[in-house]
Image 1 (spheres, protein in one colour):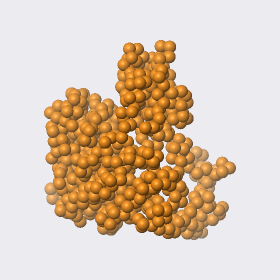
Image 2 (cartoon, each protein chain N blue to C red):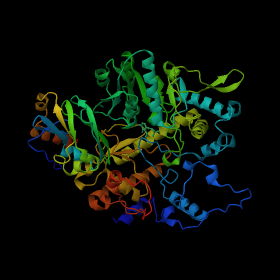
Image 3 (cartoon, chains in turn red, brown):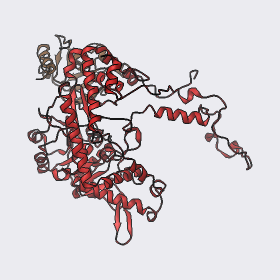
Image 4 (cartoon, chains in turn cyan, blue):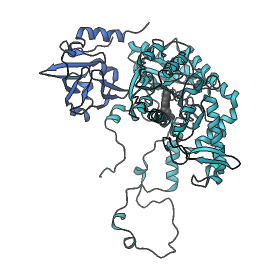
Length: 503
Length: 135
Ligand SMILES: Cc1ncc(COP(=O)(O)O)c(C=O)c1O
């Protein structure tokens, strides 16, 4: 089958408009302007007479000069280059690229939220504080934790906060513990968060079946271990079925358990990390709770704790005063401090709240069920064509590898690049690190069965192409504005800004 | 299986480093197998001269387009020299991992540790075991 026929059969892309777009700097023409200022109607001031020497510059920075419509077209055109979940399936594993309902956007734009100034007195912020107070309690209920802070700006900062709280907890008790256990399948932010807090990271090997085993934890859980960081389901999409025994071992030796909540989407309404022995965890609102992700805006990584760790929560803490509405409580002498200006990324909290309240408990549980069903459906349909390194029923995502393509010379990166020709954002690749040539696919609950089938057809077509015409795959993508970019050179010698040619 | 160069005169660790005794010091780097698995290397982070490591400690980082990996000290000792060229030319590790792509030189704390490393034959078996497609 020709390239064109194969792509037409999957039917996910056609040949629409495809604009080229130079940089604004390259479009610039001296003297062109986008606005006209009114005539000066106040006395002119001599800048040299009023400003100190150091604050004056004698030349203008090299800013581009364009008309308004040129700028509007520029940004509108490059916005059409984006892949987004509003355009199609976005199967980035571990990222939960679910659809962001437009209702959330509507609520986040209510003027009471969108136009509030963060430094308004609390009396004038009662609406948001009420929402924050309730959202904290909903997240606590969903996760089985006791308290929540909405401050951290992303999962990574939530982890940092959580490990800071663990450190503060042991310091307060006068216990010197210097290590943190992190499974070999963990996301890179886990060891980073531990290392940033001065801990030595000890890797815990996963078992042959891809999950953690109590004996591995038993062997490493020495008295100098402060905590185990655990992701459940793990990054292979597998439920850590020994978790109850594992958290018991950690607790029995005086350690704490950090839960990486990135994969909470699989558990909503079904299992609660807090009931499984987690002492502190983060939520990724931009994953599980549908707030925009990646280029779509800032994230939010609230942190949940059991009461033992509540004294260490970041301040201020939103509280309710009897008969006097909501207030901010700074009286946490053992707090790890403030992590974010004001109240964190407020509009994300509003969107997540809208999402939670529109789905309700049953709707949330249904998200988890459908996400798990979708991932298992993909796995079942792709198993005949692709190698499955840990072949067991999965939760919200599945991990394949390029192993069976070895004789064709086609590797994971080529499959990912060729998917772009079929109109799909590639899945996460080469992660988790314990799988050689991993392709990590997370469909989320947003996809219909027809949408999943189309995506499967694309991956099956690519597998056939790899056998029949490997060069086509190895040199993909062919239908984008730029073909294969030299990622190595970009990483070795990054060019980070435009510079005039003669400069 | 892909072809991996495994020189007979070197010793190897299970973390895919090679080591060579030169006078009273040990030069080491990562093996051809490691370099091929990682793919194009874009950044190498090395320790400081004078740093001390125990066998198995992470002492540096090798970053490729695909992944970031720790490099572990194959034996204990003190760093006497690091390959400064890699700061600007990390690609040397891909091009010549046993030569100009060396990582550092350490003065061993205990020379006997070198004997505990794998020889070329044992390392080849270890590499082959891992590249066999599983059932
Ligand atoms: C398993 C896991 N943990 C932590 C994180 C970090 O979260 P964030 O990207 O919100 O900082 C991610 C994000 O990709 C993840 O997949």
